[in-house]
Image (cartoon, rainbow, N blue to C red; front, side, top):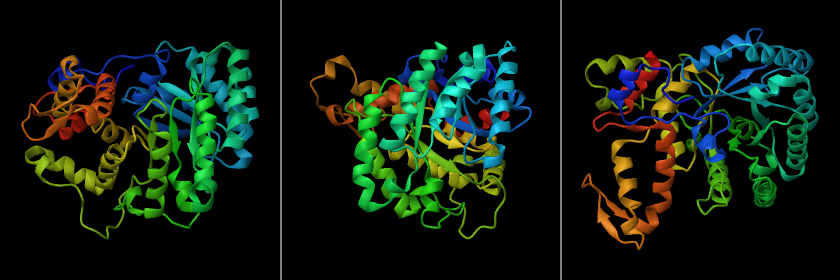
Length: 386
């Protein structure tokens, strides 16, 4: 697998100063966590799920979640479990490598039972998404995952979803976060990333953000994101990859506010692309992705294939970011100090910016580095046309 692997080699060479590296499901967890990108969710009830998985892989998707929880009704669960087993068996019979596949379960018992039923096709499973994760619920899920891993002889990762009301409510948030930190810290080698369930946060207060507002414009949600990153996203070795919240919109909606997508990056032929993005409410998505990264989140939950290319385009490291990160991490600068950036437009201070530089080079490894003069519009257009 590799990001932008679905576009032609000549086009990748034109776009990238440093191309995205290849990786597999057996790559180190740190690499996989950074490489998740746009994680596409799909209900496990889809009758041609194996075909869907391969189609999306051909469009640049590298991670998918096959959902047995909120995306299907209670009555559909047994049939969805049967369908998952059939579809994994079909995937096993194909030569093409699937993306990283995770199953979102409802109960710990589903983990052990599904792993048993998958048989040899369990080798295609990267792990499980654990809903409404708290210390009390989480330990049971994680113990079930370890038991399933032992029984199946195949390494499995967990992606807890932070979405419980206890995490949202102010009077219980501190202790809930502390409990989650204790739990995931005890299973660090199995927790690949933490996912944010912003839809559930909004539900607790009867809210739903419109397409021209981001999660960060809903202050009660933004405060939870900030606290999660504060406790669980630290760069001192105790933190985890925290992924961005889902963007719910993919159809034309009536607008209340003017478009947020500036014209300047879209001059010339790219104006048509700008118009298309605005018509499909993608300008709000692009702004939210930028705010995700500014707030310490990497990757994003997606419920529509049209969201994948924007997430990946904005995950590529710019040539300027790469130059700054390399300058900061030069061995001769281990003692600290400050310097003017090679682009001569900012100050790079070695010690305060070191953690940022390390994260940037990790992202550069899996998403690549754009050539000088290549911006996200070029990358987005290539991702959409690939």
